[in-house]
Image 1 (cartoon, rainbow, N blue to C red):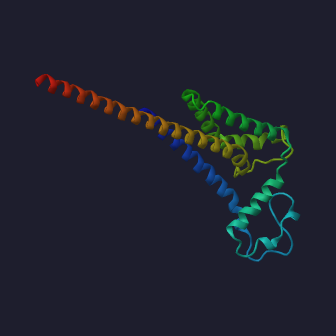
Image 2: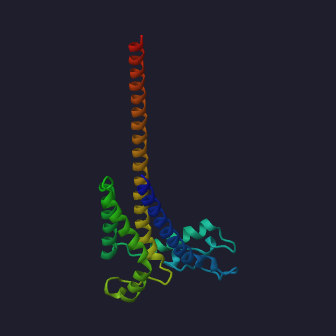
Image 3: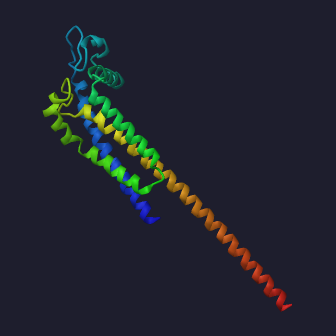
Length: 209
């Protein structure tokens, strides 16, 4: 049990570190919304997608965090051509990883290998983003790979993080269930031992009489 507990702690620590790194990248990318001038020029403006979709009325002198986030997400979604073959292939890859995580939930070794693979993919997101930003013309219609890596964080790291989180939660549930079974057996064994001891004591008393 101690070894399994240490394994779970290592998995959780790796997942936490990877998620914190992805969140920092995401925040640094969306901080650009905070650079809106206090006295914006008349008209419409946005830095993702079709500018006509966004009105400066949404971005006042003191825009709310929710409005900033909503506009950022809307701009991101409109800027991406989701029908590109490589993006569809990436979606299929994530679905396959999720199915593998679900189907292998009772196989510890497979889960460990898969979890390490997912964390390795997340760890390589930054160099992968640099590589793809250089060679994007060979497979994509536009360069999604900016220096902040926000696109890769959304379509690559975030789904893998969610799958990894599912695996950790599933492992914790399985461990809790196993612990309950062990404790239940211990209680039954203890009760059986007490019953046998009581029976022996009764036999000893009868012999003495």
